[in-house]
Amino acid sequence: MGDAQIWIDGALVAADAASLSANDHGITVGNGVFESMKVVGAGGDRVAFALTRHLVRLHRSAAAMGLVVPCPDDEVRAAIAAVVDANPGAGRVRLTVTGGSGPPGADLRGHAGSLIIAATPLTPWPPTTRVATVPWRRNEHSPIAGVKTTSYAENVIALQYAHDHDAAEAIFANTAGHLCEGAGSNVFVAVDGRLVTPPLSSGCLAGVTRELLLELIDVTEEDLPLEALAAADEAFVTSSTRDVHPVERVDDVALPRCPGPLTAAAAAAFADLVATSPDP
View (cartoon, rainbow, N blue to C red):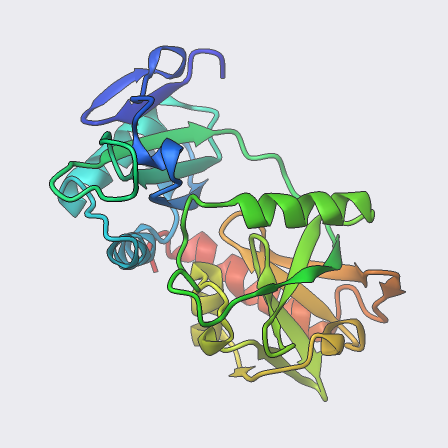
């Protein structure tokens, strides 16, 4: 996609020609929020999946960071459609709102933010994944707990740890020692024949795929010790690009079933939804 087109502050431009101020607070202090969505459909009918839910979460994250999405949702929708249409090979679209250009420091009162929309190919995930539990904790009491912020350094470090331990995803506990989330995913665990996922009070992100599964299938939101993941018969992680992704190994422990029956049922239900409802 060498001729990729992106949307930045009201216009489609060539990705290589796009620019953002060096004083933008998305760069200088990491003040920004984002949403990543997979592109579904074919030809001229390609759309960003579950866009309405992603926009709701975008506004929620922006409010938590003291940001305002710089244009109405109908304009955001039109811009996303334009970017998808301009990038035929795109499988993923990312919407980013930054704090905008301003003086040094964290105070941006009175400054407009920037809106960036980019579409890229989506490399298929392997059929199963390996995860590593990391030695750092999510702070469920943090003001940005559950906020999809561009301040991603903690996740970058955790993912590097996972990769160094032959895993593709990093799994966090929270400060209470409860299972929380992945660096870029939510976690579901089979416990006594039922599916359990950490509640939002654990500090995990309110994932869109997570939210849809809670509506589609029988899932209990419940605090679990971190150790419950490696002790499970089956488990999976979810995200907007992974959908339902079975976990085959947790640290050095191979799970007995991958995918197990609960995972397979969840994956089938979600695949049916994607095929029939592009904006559920």
